[in-house]
Image (cartoon, rainbow, N blue to C red; front, side, top):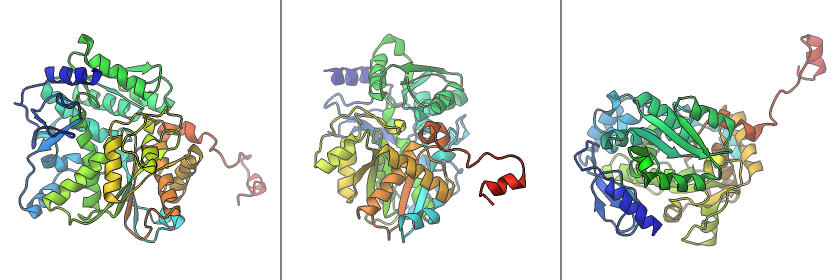
Amino acid sequence: MRRKGLAIMASQHATPTQVDLGPAAGLSCRECGTRFDLGPIFACVECFGPLEVAYDLPLGDPETLRKQIEAGPNNIWRYAPLLPVPADVAGKPNLNPGFTKLVDAENLARELGVTGKLYVKDDSGNPTHSFKDRVVAIAVEAARAFGFTTLSCSSTGNLAGAVGAAAARAGFRSCVFIPHDLEQGKVVMAAVYGGDLVGIEGNYDDVNRFCSELIGDPLGEGWGFVNVNLRPYYGEGSKTLAYEICEQLGWQLPDQIVIPIASGSQLTKIDKGLQELIKLGLVEDKPYKIFGAQAEGCSPVSAAFKAGHDVVRPQKPNTIAKSLAIGNPADGPYVLDIARRTGGYVEDVNDEQVVDAIKLLARTEGIFAETAGGVTVGVTKKLIDEGRLDPSLTTVVLNTGDGLKTLEAISGTGQTATIRPSLDAFRAAGLA
């Protein structure tokens, strides 16, 4: 009954269809296919399934569309014809995230025994140093269209900072909610933008439940929760990772891609983006495999995949990878479907392996990843060792955030030596 109440509440706050969100034609239930007008609706009133954006995509000459994209700005707005945003979005006050580096990781490839091409899609180069800037940028445009005045979210850290920064830039008030025990770097980054930052006693799932209750209360009137009542639009930002990877590969699909799993939305939307590129004729259709990566201390999707289950059983998180610590992932079942359909896999690594992978990526490629990046690199190594990932194919591994946000995870890392300021002391330390 609670889910039905949320769905009805969302529909009651829906905004009429006369909004400009570019090619977005409406919302569609992922379960039963029921269509809805554009609005801040996040659950189907018929079956309570999740909603996602349906499009009138620019089907036509792929070469013309490709040239249009390539002539666009060096951020996600080059893909505006494929996103739920107005055509003039690039001229509005926003953080302009995206088009981050696709690093040719030759050194890491040698360490892992990869003989094909290995790339790291490094999203730590975004404005608040995580991929969350992408999804928030799309949600901001929906918030503008629907007349919201406050931006909010439930967050494991990175999203809180992205919402705070985007709200400051776009002129919204922000009030974001986090678990009370997050890494200090993420707390500071979320607070510095001047919005309200509220710690909730409990884990992320407790925070998310609280936000769902706030949406249904008069206190939440005029609030756009980017990952709740704006979730259908917010999720579309992750598609831009798929677009960029393929464009940066010369408009080709990767053979294999390894993606971290928190809610699972990023993985499902990357798959959606790849399918759209195929449908539009922007890339040649060929098989690709999608692999999901979780931390062992919060691995409900991995556990379900290995057990052959279709239902994801919630877990209580206990891992240093707090940005992935969602014990009841909303898109978990869809992740299972995609991994199985593409011939991929869902794997997990323990905290020690996460730390080792962070150091490995830093040592080989000069990329300091946060714990989520350590999970994807660690899982990539494990998949190769297990023979599940083909080292001869083109593989892309995602790093979704900056290691400066999760310094606690590698707190034992520090100075090699402390010496007096003399050459003799340097020699004595054995460093010459």
